[in-house]
Image (cartoon, rainbow, N blue to C red):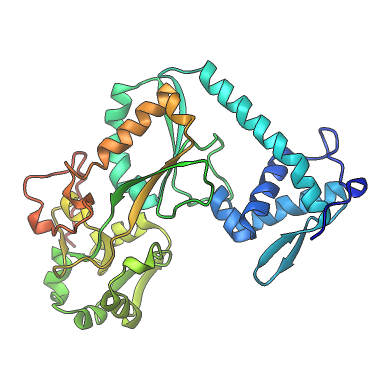
Length: 336
């Protein structure tokens, strides 16, 4: 693509015609190269991203992207708009940073995004202790289940299984989350305990449709057993998976810390099915804000492999957790 023709550059109209949120989405799509990748980065639905782009193209009366099978490419007008919008993005980030610094203290809001299962079963039971220590801080916890209606505060901290493409973020390996097949003792009393992957395939399964992170860490036998099984329950919610298992609905792949938190949950076999790494991701400026700094410290402590053997890089079977018992244990009665 040749150099843009400045005379044909789309004007960024006065306020009222173009919404900054549309420009923000446009810049993310331009960086990601696809609507789906941008939607994931922004924690929005793809239809919402498409509508933002459509709104912007309508406001400017020009086409900004050429859509193809492999993604999207900027048109000449799109390239020129990006050149004009990038300084606006940098200015917005600077203003946000100044605002943070001006309000630095142990009061205000901290937004944390994380997988819904991690939020529900590991972080949520520890929120009360954080509140007692820092009563002036409001936690906005976004599990991404409603991407079209995200929590409206700006994201401060993210826990994720994928390393972001943006190179201006701090990325720290936080924990290794070992997934293993589990069931309740009551389920095994009723249906029997499978001893092999082939026997597991014949059982009832509660399946997470979005369980795709770091596929290279998955045991091939576990994947084969899952493919051969008939799902009795399928969902994209980790909370639904766990609660269905607690209700004796079937087997499921869950993090091994669940076996430490719930005494009636039993791991099947001796090896992990998958061991993806969970990353802590944040803008380095966030670490200079007091309320975010204590939130980062809180997160690192709750995922410490030293006190939580289920988060160690090397797999530890629940039978070998010893005296390490998670705080904030929840109780469920799994009897019929």
